[in-house]
Amino acid sequence: MKNINYLKRRNNSVHVGLDVFIYREDDQYLAYAPALDIFGYGNTTDDAKRTFTNELEIYLDHTIKDQTLEADLKNLGWKKRFYQKSAYKSPDIEEIKKKSLPLLNIDQNTLVECFKKAISIAV
Image (cartoon, rainbow, N blue to C red):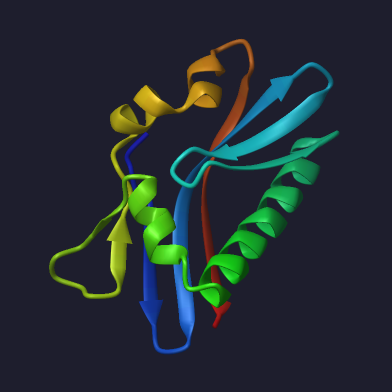
């Protein structure tokens, strides 16, 4: 899976693109974006995607209002893109795997789906 994780701030909005893995754990489905360490869950894959989107919006809203987004991205290994002042790129998936216990536990037996999630929110 090619790493396309990004976050861009433009005018009055934030645009985010993330790799998301859906996997099964016991009787639940989990949607996990290792680049931001955010989870969603549910009884179906659609429920997991829905709660993931909600959690992502809460995360962005909270870190933007508290002015901690940049520090949090830095702690997660994200870097500013040198040619865009308000754009960030996550570490590549191999770097994330070294630090992400949930990602290490996903295997072919539990992995259900991988998808790209893009979201824009007003700030």
